[in-house]
Length: 453
Ligand SMILES: [Zn+2]
Image (tube, rainbow, N blue to C red; front, side, top):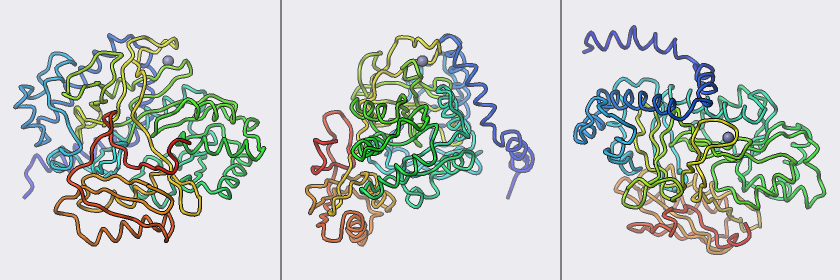
């Protein structure tokens, strides 16, 4: 039975809202390009107003938050300052798994389902609405334009293969349609593949390159070893993301392409958190994302102290991300950037490491290619893959009752497909996987490539 209110929303308000919203990425980007120059005090006003609106919406329409916000004394958006966020409990990946439906706004329509291993290695399924997609795309677009390049410029994208990316990667599909984008599927980095990539780069002459720093630096080294130039292509900038960027990688890439490297930090789950500007500042997308850095007890830390990155994404009414624990480790910087933008800065992102693994035939592969085998299986709470040697790889699995025993065979088979049929794959079920000293999980560890990244 549909009541009048539902009919009004479904028949009038929602269609109208959709028409108005449509593709509002352009409008959002224009707003962001104005507000990036605002003084911090004005940005804070905007953030507070948007946070109130988000909390109010979450209280009214998301069953999980209705209860949580009432308990925390923040019913119906009743907060006085951004720091009132600290009264609220954090949102962990385990909580998202447990309350996936109750986290959704009952008003949400047309949500897209996303699935990520995140950088923490804990599989996560969550939902994203159109509002949020518009904002994340607009924030990335703004940062792209900081570098005097734009959507439509020829771009080489060093990323996973389209098949493995699957339907979950709608942002990328959208991007590829809009832009002259060429994908270099970089999970397999055999010598022959690397030769192909370099030939493609020389032919297409990208104005920008985008991808994993580990993969792009392998391409840079390979070009140097082959005596092939990449510095005469007219490339203006290399955007890297998804992994920790090491200094030696930055140096190798900058030298090979004869242009600066711009680091970006974010994820499907947490949003487009921060991006480097040409003056060097790692600017937070402050209009949309509130970043808190917390210690192990969840206490908020001041600038200059390293802790876990916790984000509140202000464009997530459909599936609110309020105080979401990313599992990444970073620190805030309280200086202002010489570029003049008022957007606050992140100082250092310490906690993103993705190793390469080596197949039995010597092919260098991105560690993420192994993760895809495991993370989509039902009942997997957490996992870690350890490449012990070229002949042996072990998998530690934390499972719940949804896990079917035949999945073990699937994992063994899937890893052998990628690493080689002769590789021994040992799957072990464990109660939990210990964190590293940095506080992070590493989902792929290779003892073969360790030390020569
Ligand atoms: Zn700057």
